[in-house]
Image (tube, rainbow, N blue to C red):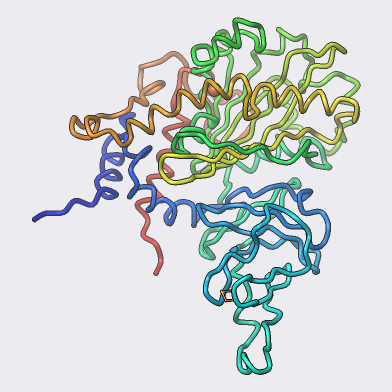
Length: 445
Ligand code: FES
Ligand SMILES: [Fe+2]
């Protein structure tokens, strides 16, 4: 009897078809592929966990996920942020069950092993009798590597993964352009919203990495009722950037005329609040025209700077949304959604900005409903017997060869590779290429 390795089969199909824009559906629905990508992709990537503001005080903690492992992001007595595997070192019991809180210690409910908020082992019941020879230094909670940038927290499980800067590559320039525009970083406008979607995590990640082409069709109802301006002309003026291994961004100049926005997407009064001397000139070049953007930092952290319709007071709400496409098995994604703005935004604007972000891209947001319903399809196809039997491929050929209008340009600020129109799935192909590279790279024993 011969056996077939579904992971090797899918990876090989992707390797053979990617240059021609042919993607096997199993990427979006096969359980074995998903189990492998948790180890090969998620365990070796720098993952976004939250904002430093969420654990402002010593002892503050929140629960987050890395791949499908639950971790505690806590601020220890040393003032540093620690990311700790939420599993007791004795026999694996969950040591922290509240989503958030403040505590100097985490005490395991099974036998009482106790850990400080920096993860160090501090004791157990009857320790002098029960654990005379136990070395506390060896038995603290397992801890991930942590990197803090722009008020954001990233973590990585694998000690052999390159530094955050090397992992980010050219994406660092774009992240700095977006998040570093205000030297004080970002203000979170509330706790992250969360909801569950019946789709593989890659659908959201690849879409936010640069899929302007879908907007006019998938979100036609929002255009018809005037919630967002007609995006069709934007296809001609959008820019797409491939920036480092798997990271991709897109930016648009399309909506500025519709709302009469000036450079940087802010009114002159708000722009005056920014520490403009701090901003790099090359970043300003991009912001002058392309200040509305989306992007995905590989694998599952997306950003979106977008605007809502003018409010009764004339405010055009510009919000920054941070999003994690949290895998929950191969067929489900838990979407985590932080709505933020720059510190430069006056206090009296912030409620309006939060409401605008929630209305468009919150759990019941207008655009969100469209996307979630649509993305289910690729996941269903990813576990379809008929699709597998008839060897179906998805078509990612937009922008390949002579297929589409537009191409690589060197007229835009920023490193990496830029394309000047939206008739292009190069960002998605770059995402898939890096996923493929990671899946083909053996795991160190
Ligand atoms: S499993 Fe945690 S103390 Fe025993
Ligand atoms: Fe969408």
